[in-house]
Amino acid sequence: MTVSMRLKRGLAMLALLGMAVPALAETTVSDAWVRASVPHQQATGAFMILTASNDSKLVGVDSPIAKTVQIHEMTMNGDVMGMKQVSAVELPAGKPVALDPNGYHVMLMGLVRQVKEGEQVPLTLTLEDAKGERQTLEVQAPVRPLTAGADHDHSHMMH
Amino acid sequence: MPECPPVFRPTLPKGGTFPAKDGYMNDLMTRRTVVAGMGLLGLGLLAGCSPARGLEFKYGKNMSNEILGRSFKLKDTQGNVRTLSSYYGSMPMFFFGFTQCPAVCPTALARAAQIKKLMGRDAGFLQVVFITLDPERDTPEVLDAYVKAFDPSFTALTGTQEEIDAVAREFKVFHERIPAGDTYTISHSSTSYVYDSRGTLRLSLSHSLNAKECTEDLLTLMEIC
Image (tube, rainbow over all chains, first blue to last red; front, side, top):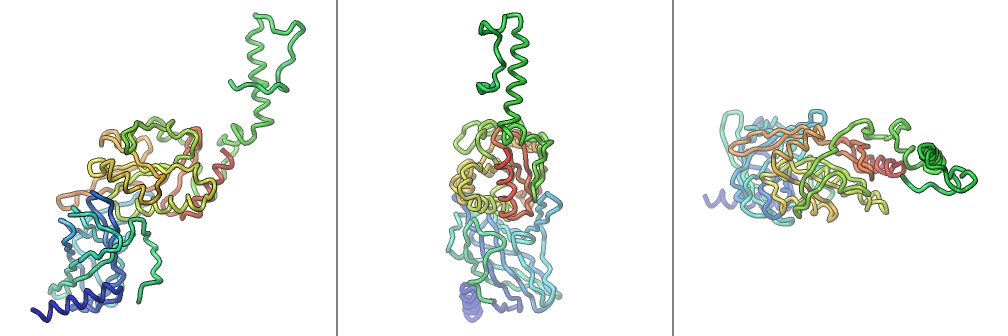
C-alpha cells in the first residue's frame, strides 16, 4: 500500500514537471492541462495526450474538483460543432491519442470551486486493457489560462 | 434628407423661390441632385456598400444579400436592453456559444482577441458580442467575467431561453441540448456574423478561419463600408 502510494506520488511529481509518465498499465500521459474557469462557472475541460503500450481504453476520469467528470467528443459537421458524451476512448497500442479541445476531451462538471491559472488539478484516469483489467493513473494537470488555445505553444514542455 | 452641397443646388428661377405649385418638382430635382452629389462625392458611402458592387472578401462569405438577426432584443450583462441599433457606429461581430463549451467558444473568443490586436488602430471599431445559448447556466456574472477574460472590451448578451431560441432562429443558428448523464451539453453553429456601422449584415466568418484571415476581411469591410 505504502509503496504504491509512494509510486503514485512519484508519478504525480513527474507529471508536474511536464514529463511523459510511465504508468502502471504502461500508459503514458503527457501535456496534461486544465482550462481555467471564471468564478461560478460550473464546468471546464481537461486535456492531455495518452499513449498505451498495449491496446486499451480510457473508461473514466475522476477529480476532487468536480462533482461529475465525463468524457466528451467534439466533432465539426460543416459549421455545426457537435458535442456528445462517450463511454470510453480507444487507446491503440503505441499510438498517441490526444484529448484536446478539437476532439475527445475530459469535462469537469459541477466544479466545486474556481479553477485558477497556475494551480494543479488532480485527475484519476481509469484505464481498461484488452482483458478487461482496470488500473488507475494519477495525473496532476497544470491549469492554463481560460484564453489558452488548442494550438498552445508546447515549446517549453519536455518530450 | 441630407443637406445638399451648394454646388448641386438647382438653379433657382428669378425671384428666388419656386412657386408653391412646383413644390413637387422642386423636391424631385433636389432629390436627383442629391443622388448625383452622392455619386460624385460619396463613392465610399452608399454606392460602395451596395452588394451589387460586390464586396470582395478573400476568406469569409459576403452576406449582403442575406437578412439575418435584424430584430433581436436581448440584455447585456448589466441588464440593459440591446438591439442591433445599439451597435450602430461600430462594426459588431456576433457569435453564439456557452461558457461550458471546451473548444469552439474559447477558440472563437481567443481568435477575436487576436483579431483586435491585428487590427491595430482600427480595433476600437470592432465590437465583439457573445450571445449565450445556455442562459440557464450562464448567469450575467459568469458571462461577463468569461468574455472579459479574453478582452475587456468584449460584451455578452443573454435572455430567457425562449428569447435566445428566437434570436438563434433569426440568425439561422442551429443549437441543440444534448443530454450528458444527469446534465447536458450543447451542439451549435460556430459561425461569426459581422454587420456594418449602419446595421447591415455584411460578412460571415467560419470557425475554421484564423485571426489573420478574419482581420483581412474585416479591414476590407471597414474600407468599403
